[in-house]
Amino acid sequence: MSEGQKFQLGTIGALSLSVVSSVSIVICNKALISTLGFTFATTLTSWHLLVTFCSLHVALWMKMFEHKPFDPRAVMGFGILNGISIGLLNLSLGFNSVGFYQMTKLVIIPCTVLLETLFFRKKFSRKIQFSLTILLLGVGIATVTDLQLNMLGSVLSLLAVITTCVAQIMTNTIQKKFKVSSTQLLYQSCPYQAITLFVAGPFLDGLLTNQNVFAFKYTSQVVFFIVLSCLISVSVNFSTFLVIGKTSPVTYQVLGHLKTCLVLAFGYVLLKDPFNWRNILGIMVAVIGMVVYSYFCSIETQQKASETSSTQLPQMKESEKDPLIAVENGSGVLSDGGGGVQKTAAPVWNSNKEF
Image (tube, rainbow, N blue to C red):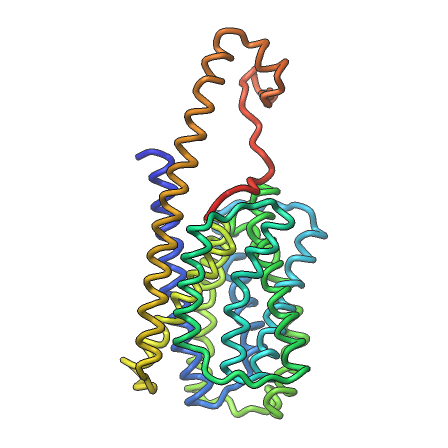
């Protein structure tokens, strides 16, 4: 099996894991919040991250992955920013109508595209932009109902969108810049995310629910669903970093809207949630947008791979004729210091990767 085929299988596996785990945790949390009355979402998220860190620490002890320390300031800043973005999203939901909150989530994709275009010179073809427009239109039809505006809610939503976009872009660029895996990045950033939410969680939840998380009556059923939610969250957090690292922040957001459609469908089938023609039409349009997006991404990736191989082949032939040419032209051939073996230096990250 070629490296390209292995990468594609790994990407498909990451996407599948993300969808299954995210839909599962939404259903679990819905039972916990709606049925059992445990409405402390931010505090619950901090517990998710603590369990994820403990699970990864056990995996490290079992030597299932290698610990690779890198810039501690980057890790701390990234972890705190992720924690802040989660808290702001919860506040946005608390101070806005559900319809406006769903619109806030839709804005994340065009905002991410804009930031990557301005600061990373990333190019998005018209075909990709067209498919994203179809997707956003479909999800908007399915989820956005009322759009009640207020100043505080609008400011919180704006901050939530900006921090979420920056955090997801950083997830992708940090993995490429420091050459760390999704597991290594998650392991090192988890404590900072967890501490940020653990400190702010009770205050935010108290502000939104007028209840005290420590005064809540924890029955055996509530504890069971909390433990189940925390265990599923390990898969959710891991697959999030894995998907963004293997694809792009925009692709992860597209996947997130697929999850939204699946949650709506499962809610109707399993939980008998209300469902109308707008939900059905919106899901159908969104699925069309996702299929078109996936198709165009696949075509452009294949074209880019063929262009890269066609440009590298003449360079390899030229360097075989005269090795000095490669050095004089700065082709990036470096010695690894181990017996004269040479390798090609990879770029820090590819800012023109198209998805």
